[in-house]
Amino acid sequence: MSKKHPIISVVGSSGAGTSTVKNTFDQIFRREGIKAVSIEGDAFHRFNRADMKAELDRRYAAGDQGFSHFSYEANELKALEGVFQAYSETGKGQTRHYVHDDREAAKWGVAPGLFTDWAPFEEDTDLLFYEGLHGCVANDEVNLSALADLKIGVVPVINLEWIQKIHRDRASRGYTTEAVTDVILRRMQAYVHCIVPQFSETDINFQRVPVVDTSNPFIARWIPTPDESLVVIRFKNPRGIDFPYLTQMIAGSWMSRANSIVIPGNKQDLAMQLILTPLIERLVRDAKRA
Image 1: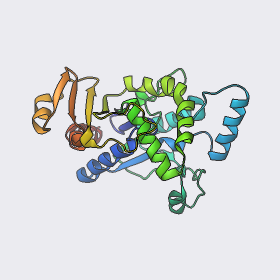
Image 2: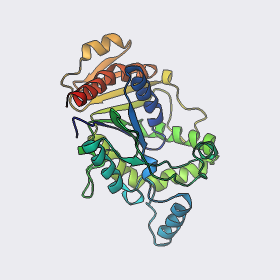
Image 3: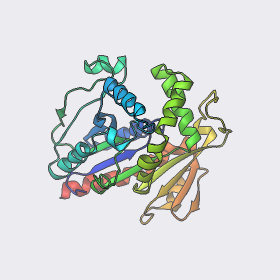
Image 4: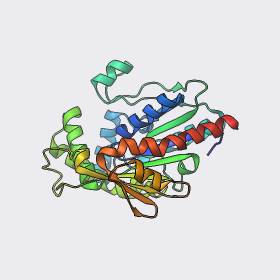
């Protein structure tokens, strides 16, 4: 952690909805005049697309069926820790981009499946914002959780997470349901051992819960809408959180535990604005004083 150069880390698996949460953060940054530098977890994958396929084939041949992008060893977590450490100490660092598709290729001038070159951060930023798979990892090799000042988990219930991933990958990447299902199965071991433990490190978790039948996510024709969902918001340390204010401001909300509030799914953006804006303002204010 660093008073002078704060870091916000948003963690969630593929299909969890972290990109939507990033949009809310961008709104807050823009409204409050905060200059943030953003980095993506995909930038720290160890392999480009072709090399990852070759590595998967090699591991499958050796009997390793559980290797995936979720696995620690498929990512440059030491490099990510180095970026966190450098920014917390100096406000400087570097990142790159992993190019997913033709649209991003046109933007970055690099073919899909490859990385852009590493480039330095902009100067004089107020904070570092991370969004990806591994921003709160704490294991024997790295401790990213200790370096982040505000940690957010985005954790839909698992069937909803799968529905969102299946629909996204079919629509934007042209995958079949069967292909996405194979990816889900391959990632399950690393999901349990590498992704899930991070949600015990986060300061706040946003967990979306559908109130419609999602019992077979692999045949779901539609993603449950926000109106068909609730969101459970869990605070690791509820001290200082004004729950009466939140329940008054967010219609239809209630407290389910001493550290948790439940809200209608269509109120998530409002809840994030109300909860996160003062926390972010405090980080930036303390940084400027430091």
